[in-house]
Amino acid sequence: MSNTDVTTIHFQLPASDGELLSCTARFPTEPVRPLPALIFLHGFKGFKDWGGFPYACQRLADADFYVVSINFSHNGVEGNGTEFTQLERFANNTHTREIREACEVIDAVAGGDLPESHLLLKGRVGVIGHSRGGGTAIIAAAEQPSVAAVAVWGSVSTFDRYTPQQKQRWRDAGFIEIPNARTGQIMRMNASFLDDLATNQAQLDICAAAARLSSPLLVLHGEQDLSVKPDNGARIAASAPPDLTTYLPIPNTGHTFGTVHPFAGTTLAFEQAIDATEGFFLEHLLH
Image 1 (spheres, helix red, strand yellow):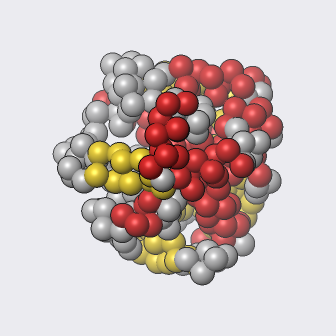
Image 2 (cartoon, helix red, strand yellow):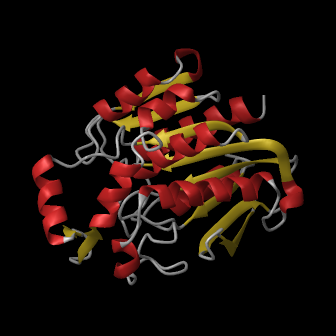
C-alpha cells in the first residue's frame, strides 16, 4: 500500500430509464499517474457500503486506482444508506435490470462521465463483483468491450438457484419471502423476478458469458463458503478461457472472507482477497 491520501466523492449517475444510481468514487488525492478505473458491484441483499466493501475500495484507491462502487437502483437501500427501507423496489428487482445498470455504469466510466474524470487512464476499466454481483460482472464484461479485466469474489455460477417446488410456490403466491438474518426483515421478491430469469435464460447464463470473455478473469472463493459453495467458483473458472483465467481458492474462510456488517475490522482472508485483486488489476490494467 502506498498510504496516499484518498478523496471520497458521493454522486449519482442517471440510468437510461430515469433511475438515479447512488455511487461513491475513491481515488488518490494527488495521483502520480493516470488512474485505471475499477467498478465494484455488490450482490443479493448487499449494498455498496456493506461491511468491508468501503474498506476494500479505499485500499484499492490507495493503490492508485479510481474506484467506483454503486448501489443498484432496486437493491432496497436508499441513497448512501445502509438499511433496507425500499422493500417494494427490492421486490421488483430483476437480473436484467442489474446487468443493464452495470453496463451503463461501465459506459459512464469509459466515457469519462464521472467526478474528476480527467484523472482516468483511458481504455483501462476493470470490474469487481461479489456473490450475485460476480455473475452480473461477468455478463456485463462479456457484453462490454471496454472492460479490460474482471475479478469476482464468492461468485454464483448460475442465477437459477431455486428448486422446481420453490418456483411453483413462488408463482402460486405471486412472491417469495426471504428473511434477512441481520435485520430480521422479511423481504419479498415478486414473481416478475422468475419471469425475467425464464425469459432471458441465454443472456443470464453466467458460465456461457465466462466462456465468451476476451479479458482476463480472476475468480476468488472462500473454501468454507456456505452461502455460495466453492464449486460455483470452480465452475466459472472451468468455463472461462484457460489462458485468461486465474482461480484462487482462499482457505479457512467463507462468503465475506470473515468480515461482517457493521464492519468490525479486516481479516487475514480479506487482506488476501484484496491483495490478490490489487495485483491482478495492476498486471492487467497497467502492464
